[in-house]
Structure formats: structure tokens, C-alpha cells
Image (cartoon, rainbow, N blue to C red; front, side, top):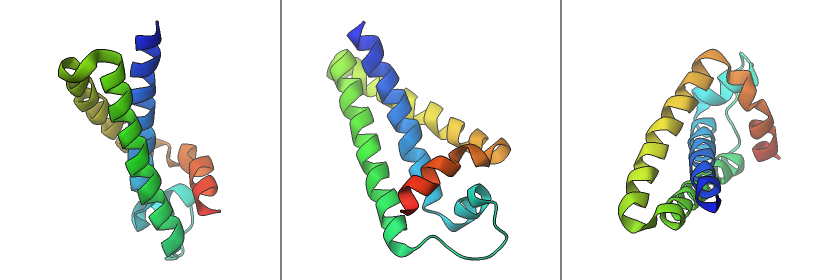
Length: 108
């Protein structure tokens, strides 16, 4: 049962990492905030997004290795990365407002 929780953590943290990477980019930041102004995310918040995104992907990798070992864990991690990237893409396309809470928490 702990293995299932670690795999779920790997998928969730991959999604979080890619969402943070997306929020660091100006077009995605504007889409999530819903503003029409060309105001970009402050530099410190953008760096925080990138650093937290790297940390989330590292956590995803560690959870995958912890759940399945080095041989199959790397495959699970690659699968998690692909699914998370598609998930963030669909979220930004159809429901970008779902990422507003994440954006507000990082912008502080």
C-alpha cells in the first residue's frame, strides 16, 4: 500500500513541478491570472517558481525510485513526467483558473 502512495506522490509532484514551470512563463502567468495587462511575474517569484518546480520534480524522482526501485522506478518517473506534462497542458488550455491558488501562493 505504501508503494501506491509513493507512486501517487510521484505523479502529483510531477504535475506540481510542471505547473510551477508554466507559471514562471509570462503567457501562462497572464492566462492563469486572467489579466490583459502585460505585467509579468516579478523576478523573485519567477525564480521561486523555477526552484520549487525543480524540487517537485526531484521529489517525484525520489518517490518513483522509492516505490519501484531503480530499474522500474525510472520508467514510472518517465511515465509520470509525460502524464503530468499533458495534464498541465490540458489545464492551461481549458481551465487555467484552476492554477490560481498555486499562483497566489508562489507570488507572495
